[in-house]
Length: 264
Image 1: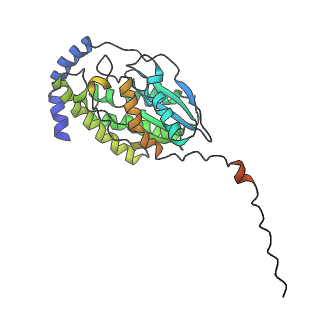
Image 2: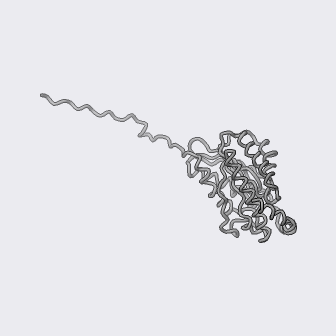
């Protein structure tokens, strides 16, 4: 781990040279239009889902929020459990773990979220934040979430394989993959220690379909695949809705007539 970190720092001039070129060529995309708070119908106690973090939580890369991670995950949860799902997406372009900890979580209303999905770490890796800095800031974010929503289930989605990101030249992708691996290893450790679930890394099976026109953010197909990937982790903490008793089951059982004894 230390050797890989050292190699990435020695390659910092390559990162700067190729990174500037990528930034100049890549379209700067705004968060998607549309609602960031919504509800999916169901029966029983609602699941309250907060998707929190960086530009991916803000559905950057697509035109409308109904194709984003929160909007895609909520109906899957509702369909699998039968329960209503109330969801909110709280995502911000270029956000790092420290920014979400310091400026987002303190300003969110104290809604009774039962499940929090965190998309963070890509910008920390891309910005060459040290592992110790990520430990301090992401670890503090987990503490802040646990303090504000002590009963919530918290899930973190690690950084994807950066060598599979179309916008990145191969050498830059390999370099950023080193940084992403360091961030992911620390993030998984912090989740174990601080009561969160680190999901498996989202596989990038078809980069051409999974990424938007900027080659960096997810497309609608990418967000849909991400939602399906996160679903089993979320479902593991949710009981299905209990259906109301049918009219026949509410009736008192008919009393069986007593058998008369035959005359002796």
